Length: 195
Image 1 (tube, rainbow, N blue to C red):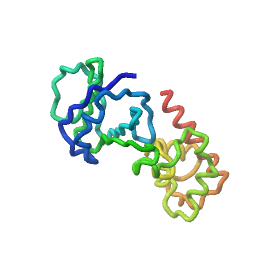
Image 2: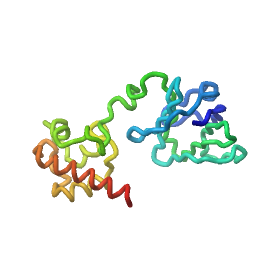
Image 3: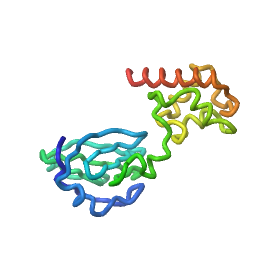
Image 4: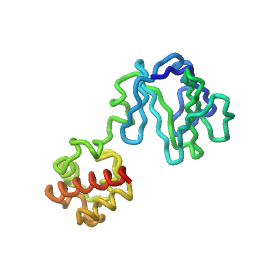
């Protein structure tokens, strides 16, 4: 619901080049919603969407506008309240991009698999996506083109819970075992969120 008064860009060389005119583009736009798709934060600003990725070490902090920047503070989004949303990323694996089209068709988002806690992620889908694959089931679960949000620890926990060895070739698992695995993934993620 806040408006952006602009942006201060200190470093445009992140994982992907930051648009040099981003501050001008954002000036006066209202943040309608903030959502997430995979590891991408999406700030819907009406005429476009600000796409943020925190990478391995990035963070966003709400700070008073007068807070002096530190070495790895690359971008400040200036809100109309006198507060800034500061993007810090010591390793520069994150990104800040602007998209004026349907953001779900953006090259970074279009190929992502379903969110794991939705109905779209089910045993039948996982079975179909793994036919002919010789990669291990753990590798497949960590592939964001198959499903997003199932990282190393969650994949291991869910596979253990479902009684499936992580080194089993994905193409050799049947649909019933995949249904059990999907239930285990959802249970594991929900327990993790609760914790």
